[in-house]
Length: 441
Image 1 (spheres, helix red, strand yellow):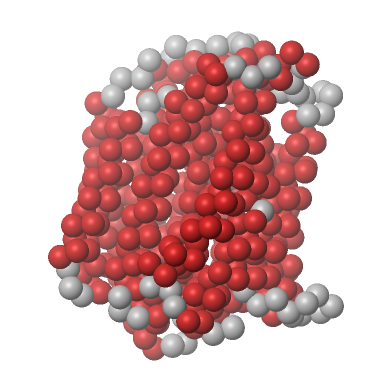
Image 2: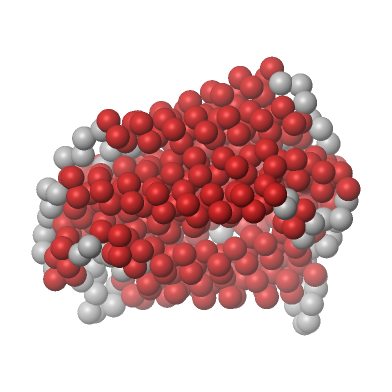
């Protein structure tokens, strides 16, 4: 067992959790620049491109959730448990297997979206200019899915060792590349071509490509403890299973989460492009909290994984509750502010009265329930570290069932927003209850 792993096992819970979360929380500010910047730049092109961005956003969310949070959680969990048990060779071999999974998933994402994307966007209500804008953005971004998977997998590998700073610094650098490049390509600023919404996709892939190259250099440098030896490149199913027993169900959970978002987008899309654009702007603030919880969650994956690997299950649970409480308080602050002053957010992206109205109504209704979402997601990450994600997954299934039933029977836009709020509260409450009843070995 390395000295770094031993220090994590002996360190105070809350200060260590905060210290490991801090680089990711800093990263949130810079990654938020990507989401806000792209929404702002594309919003300058008009309501149809903004609606097109909302149509694609669930699939972009799926790409990030599966590569960084789902399979990435499986990678970090497996490596942290191996290091917690003092098995450095197993950790090196897991790196190789993780990258094979990333390559396969990246290719699968590209094929899936290029073939089925147009039909999905039509089902979500896309038509005319908004559908064309969605395809212009989607085709470019998902053509580069493999580099996004590679970057997020390498980031998860490094986080699995407890090194949160380097992946965060690299992705901050990627954000600093993305924002000015996106502005230039979307709006035609400077010598670069005016590509419209497709320019945001080019910037996205370019920034993640740079991040993947940097982190690959770190993992495979000669002095790296994770640099695979020649014999470590032999592929074996049990090592794939070690990652997939957490990562595969987590990917299904991500699909379930995004399917929930897709269904909701379809329900909202019945009320027109302005309602869809306003919902997309409001939803974007909700989803911007995911990276905040992700920063805390990735610290939970590593700390819980190392402690479970070392046989310290009770201490792992204390870490999980501390992380869930921290995430909930952050989201509570955001929720209170935007529910009281929704136009402060929505008006950043549109001046269309109908967009302002739907976005504001969404935030007033759903934002007070953000803490339930944050606590549920944080405990889900903690469960990844423990290698036990079935019950939190079922909490997400309950949320989907409420959305499907409510959306089918409710006949107003405001009613759909109320259903979202109820489903969010149920999800958080069930996850807390399930984790409280589950023993981690």
